[in-house]
Length: 220
Image 1 (cartoon, rainbow, N blue to C red):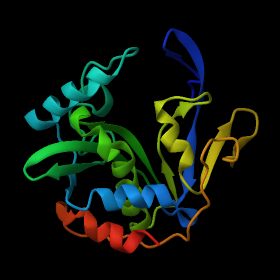
Image 2: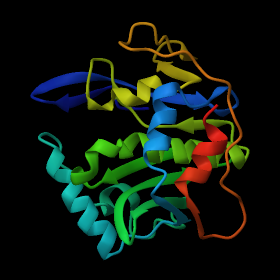
Image 3: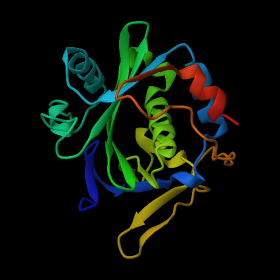
Image 4: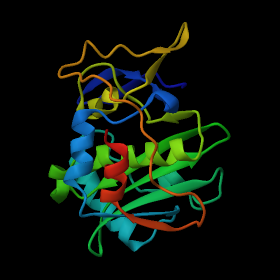
């Protein structure tokens, strides 16, 4: 939380740091629709790695950016992401055998932090950034974590505003610490639905499940 501004589209924009209390979280109506829209996809959760598939997907993903174009996944994850400096899990989403999205979740003692997410711009209609975030939240809640950190967004409108629509949000105020985030100032705010238990199971380091199974239990 040392950074409070970010160069964005030729301006210096104030950052907004967010987290959610997992015992207060659950999918909104629009987020439940994202899960239903993607029931044909397959999820694989495994220790993070950076292989040829991930590098190719990252290359496609970064074409979306104008400012602050990232160089490589290594800049975000390091050279041994599965174990150093903390354990990082990869949430890989497949359409058939094609990797179309991946996100990376760092595990701590009581909290998890979403480090980075990538997706194929050809599949932007699927809202894959929102999808992988919902999958991470489901995993963290089932594992008994207290907080989920989705990463920063901007105080002003930006493509990262989907993070502001999470339920159970808190924002970091520099002079006061963490406070509940007021969502009524956002367009198209939705009422929270009751938080539901997720469906991803703990245990083996690699797990595969149809996303449809998650949607059926998580969308109330």
